[in-house]
Length: 231
Length: 230
Image 1 (cartoon, rainbow over the protein chains, first blue to last red):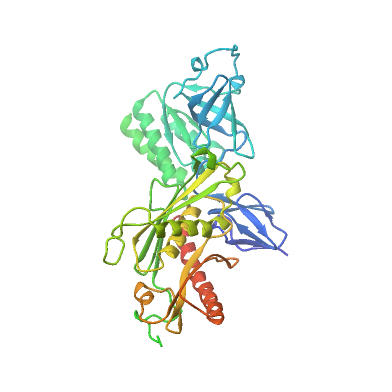
Image 2 (image 1 turned 135 degrees about the horizontal axis):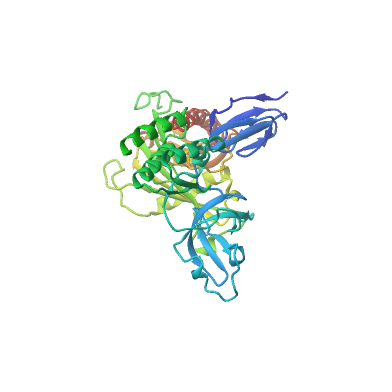
């Protein structure tokens, strides 16, 4: 019989044994060494059925397929853009993936120039971690207004919240348009600059206190208190 | 015979250890490890882009360590700043001590940079550096099989001891100083260096001592990492 050695949401370090026996299966952040499951990452334990996962609490962005990311165009060739998505290597956006017709020989800088920010989807990640981007899909576009802030990519799920509860709370209260990229870049645009600033502060607060319990309530209080002064 | 240690410790007793994680704000992972008067600081950056490009390996990432003693870290004399023969060697063996636990195949074409700074030295700096670096690597969210714990063991004038100080290293008599790094869960040795002489039995006993000591250090490392989020 298998036996769990840790509880759900326990914090574990690399090399810590999390389960015994063949009943539990290693998932992300764990590996099997003979009969034991061992953590391979510094993070908290997540158990779903027989799968044991360790979800990291820190670290850089790890690109995965179908992630929506916010990137900055860093370089271009005749047929590609190279986009900085906060990973070690730059992602490639082909001119065929812009979602609109690009005539051969067009100067690509007329579509996206160096320094432009874009919202894109990760089409695929190769084994060598080469990233392909695509602009085809709803909401994928060049960013021309608003501001972009940086948060830790591991905290993005917390900023979005369960089924988007946290982010829709901030959107609703401040009336801002917000887009959270999986790579930790957040785009915020509001009609009222003061409200936009409050939204930025709220997101930075989540970034710093991501492991506090009942964070949604605290953010709600913070937003209500701050917004009272504005109105 | 060296029966009573100069600082009054038991033969298998470690100096007081303090460890903290997440102290360099701009780094991806960082840690401080203090054992007695020796203080090591480690900061990890990466995985990030690797240049020059010919060093890039499409199959696995590169681990690059840099060990450095601060100019004020010595006991008396100012340490000449910059790379030395000694710091180059220690950087190299530190890489060797940490690489076996890191899953570098997860990070092809990239580099993980580890910077170890010694703020204060009283022997065992390479071991303290390795302990700090392994915590910093974990803090950087990198995939690792295990942590690494390291300690210096040895023999002073016929007596087997753990965690030598500078005073003991310079003891007037025959001294063997063995630096050992161990992956605490599996007990594999990733670093083994020795100054002086020791016979087979003494060496075997020293390994046992080091294993015990590393278990204790491991507990401190685990606690320090977990404290970051409590």
